[in-house]
Length: 636
Ligand SMILES: [Zn+2]
Image (cartoon, rainbow, N blue to C red; front, side):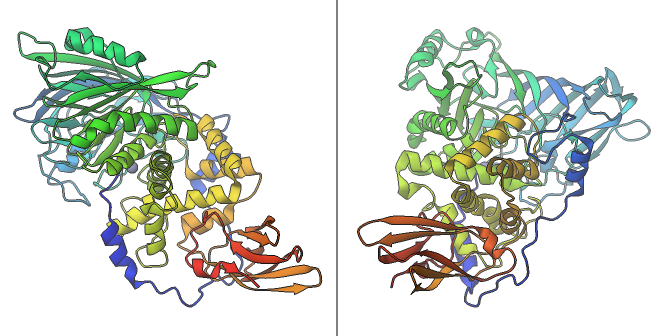
């Protein structure tokens, strides 16, 4: 998700900072806290300390077959469907947990955000292998807020599967709900069906409730979904449309065909088109979609959307040595003027991120204009009618970066919101820099600057905080979105471009469509760099230590220039020195972070005194979030 910028909130909260007296950690800097669940997973052989999954790694799988009918006048959705759940764990399961996310909008459910009340989910029928279950009582299912527990009369053995069936309905909440909603012309439908919770090798069932702020943790599954909406309403969804000839007009079909090969943007459904969809005697159309190996299925529909399409070149996505492409679709109302750029923006985002991370693997990427400011679903993102083109670009790039994190890197977004939001924000800033130039990208981006403003104030809490346990929205935004932009830029500065990129790609190769923890990501960086980086993880993920390295002086001793470096804030970071000499020669000297780890606050670096040194500058690339730039230069 992308939140509406909190610039004002963060700036005013940051006014209380007093970074005067050094508050340096006196003793040695110790490693990261023990994590017994992760250590147990290594012992069991499902994880390793190299960052790769262990030989015994397993994860559950599921196949959903869903159908839904949307009454657009009454804003009522009626759904039914089944999910076949496969137990690939070594454990026998006696019950299954499901997310009933529409219960966020029920008055009795706990929540940490103001949301419209709709009555929540009406669960009309629940079956296990075709046998109906009652609610409550002996052998019945139980609902607590957004979590349902379904008992299994026949325990689910390793290797076995069970079919759960549901019939349900709900009123689609108005506005931007959060993350879904409707305004009568556009319906964004998400969190809309009973979804089996993750049962993983580290923590077992993950059943943290949906309270509004924290996001999701979903397993990978196949979907076959049939959606019934009135004629004239275009549908955009996760997965591939199976019956285009049943629902699209002849002109839309031929324009869509052109968009498959054209590099320009094609108007598939446009202002003067007499018909938006095929007609049908009963006034309803069925749109059928199939998606494989995705974390979720979401969709949107509108009787006002226009439809643009083009294609993006993504590189070799399937490993056959050939260059692949992905279709780009954007849907928006004529009133959303900046959206006429949306297909080009989505194409640029996909192409840039495919180069910067790894090739986009899905058949299409679709952006739809909705009441929601910015929210990601597999192959689909819901974004508001943002007026400013550059702001629209950054939201599109952010949501599209989520197609990697968490859509492919299937992390637990509630426990580790920085894992998907921070990485999406980091790659968003890199994409924006590529599109608009350095002024739009890190380190000049608002995320980097907002972190520096909040650093050392009471707005900051550690990144390793559960998404529903932040003391304020500002604290959540700084830790989950803005500080990670600075952290991942700094990590790239510590490791260099090639090691940083290799570590990410290793992580992707090992964990794509799986469930890594932060340790698996950190281990990939340690493995690729062949270094222990515990000091880095401790500093930036578990603490709110701030950084200020300074050059306090220099003097020539014999044929050396001695440069005095001080650590004036707790964070231990490498000192990267650019030494400029008479005659134009420049040397780079890297003092590793290790010099601080025993608790030292001063270090003397020695370089050759000739040719004569004109100046010495710390962190010349501004890779690190150094709070005091004024003390980073020295000249004799
Ligand atoms: Zn996000």
